[in-house]
Image (cartoon, rainbow, N blue to C red; front, side, top):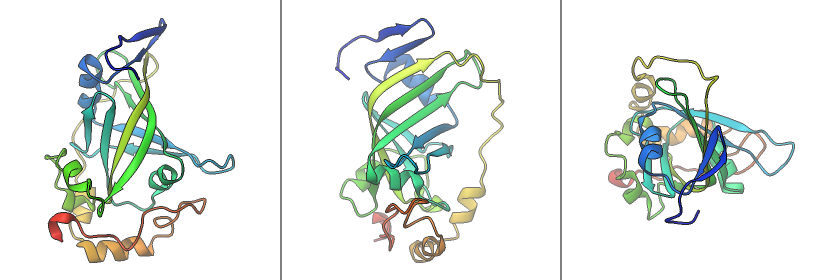
Length: 209
């Protein structure tokens, strides 16, 4: 994307943007949930789609870069796909207010706990107690194409509040027990298609090490 260029009208019901700022950024940051889509290079491989919704776990780093926190879970498909090819699409929907869908297509990288960039990236998410969620990595996405579309068919849905289940569950773990938990899961170190996933053993969080 060319810095300083205006948005480009390509469709009466959608626009392409040269940067993530202004109204577009405000819309993205106001949403309570977003979705990530990735896939392996193998045409027979498994396409993955994941919801992301812990409050404060997404950040716009600059006009062309976004990031989100990757927490403990039962698989690591997104991490595996990004390690193989980097392709990722993020999507936000308006469930209240004017209809809108925003997609950021780009290249993503999982920055793991032992990466020198990790502490500074985590500092961009001050509202999240990362120890309570079993933080595995920070996924950084460089936007290559940013578009919005109408969202006319997306229903109204009311936001009632955050679930505490994830934080409550993983707050009971320390780095040692979290590493053991990951080691027991079939698709953490490798993806469903056998790609390298989360590197194990899990390094300690910098604040704990």
